Image (cartoon, rainbow, N blue to C red; front, side, top):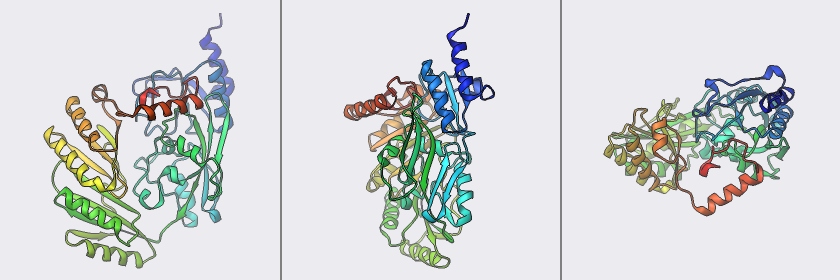
Length: 416
């Protein structure tokens, strides 16, 4: 007797190739939820074929790149197929004259930069994960310090190819920077955690690679002083590429700015800025060790959004909450933009972590727990509260893009 499972497997083998389909193992689990199969797809057409087969058999699918951030967010309610795009890799086109690069979703960002650096260009998306891919960067919306000057992932993304749950191939934008057709659609996919479609290709705008870099690091004894330094850098004429802050439960707070540009002129700008900031400031040719790193390689990690003017309040709240609950806190992020990340130690007691998260959410525009040990996950809502109007809008978008709710079900806010 032919079972539904064997029929579905046969359809997936026909779509992906028998050699590209295997039984999933525990190592393929997403937050403890193990899929039944894992399929590799090397290009847009193959992804479309696999998703058509999955649609025909009602299979729930979660896309995966290198897997560096697959543990972020809420685990899927259930998953039948893990769609591996790590072999869908390579730079499709580098139009150096137009400052544009077109790459497949499984391409590591490091590979893109190795390619474009040959013509003195850069894709200004810093990632703390060496294996981070194009698709993963878009799906999680993670941007590094350069976002201050060049914009984040959603700003640099000018074209995108996505396969919908039913296997339909869709394209938005293009490879000309001035072409804004469908640009907002690319923004919708950014940060969607694979719940709206499977990203297969992307086109990014590039920037010239500078000849010289300098980092100006200032140390502050109080949160107010740190916020004042960050504000002074932001308002200066130095044109910083990034303005980052680093703080722990207690002790000094560090504010660091990156400058880049022509040889000698960049160093001069840096020394002038350092002089304006006063004592406890130094200029170095290399960034501090925490630069462009996340403070939660393990443990509980949060992404926090505030108004830049509220930096003092956020730092005060975070340190006080950490001290009151006897927590080991590390906080870093874009002081000039108000996008910060906080990390707590892996052995943090769940109720103490919950109190810390609540304190942050009471003093921030948003605070999302990206990663946490299971006991902490059980004690808090990872995504936090959201207005009914916003949640209803997100659900309508989900229903429009994935009406059967088969792409990464439950991975996003509100169980979307």
